[in-house]
Image (cartoon, rainbow, N blue to C red; front, side, top):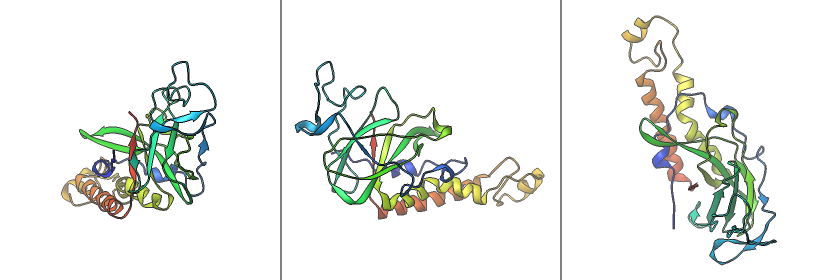
Amino acid sequence: MNIIILFTILLLAVGCDAPTTSRKVNPATGANGFSQDPGTTGATSGGNPTTSGSTSGGNPSGLGVGFENCTINPQYSYDGLNYVGACLSTVTNTLIKFKLSNTDFTNKTCLIPMHEYMQNGQPSQRYIGNPVCDFHEANVVYQHTFTKYANEQNSTIDGIMVMKLQITTPFYNCMDAASNYVNSYCPYYNGPDYVCMSAPQNLYCYSGPNNYCLANAQSSMAALCNAFQSNYSSVYVPFD
């Protein structure tokens, strides 16, 4: 069983760009729901669905063009009990197909597109597009085309974060904590250099936030992310 918890990576993902909250869709109201894959009718043994047509022609998965080598068997637990499996299209880099092991018509499940990158020599992640949230049936193959943010069009979707709708707010609070802190408490100081040099404890410098401020931003992010990890269940599903 493959279970990957994100927060060994999250605490390294400290950036100084504008907060992403300004461009994020509200998961509760602004995200389109899941769409059932029109070419599938359910699940068979081995984790691959049956289809309404032939699987001949080099498409053993039965999931259509771009998913020929996809094994969609749910194997990542997002709440300790239920599982999700997902694949990214090799043709359309925003299209995914996924399946969950449980039925839930009470609490929506959300998928958030993530990008992997290196920062200061360490692996890190950030969310790069709108989430999608919906109710779902067990072992039904769904599909969704993510909408990436305008400034992330060249970023690849390398995996998805999966969690219940009610914990998306603390997740985004964690992910945005460092940039929110920098933008709130570390404004650029457009004055003489000697002010910063003579008072290094200040939260700003002539050229931008200083290391003291950035350390505080890291601490803010660590506190919120550790709280999220301790109190809530989620999982990162990577696309190989």
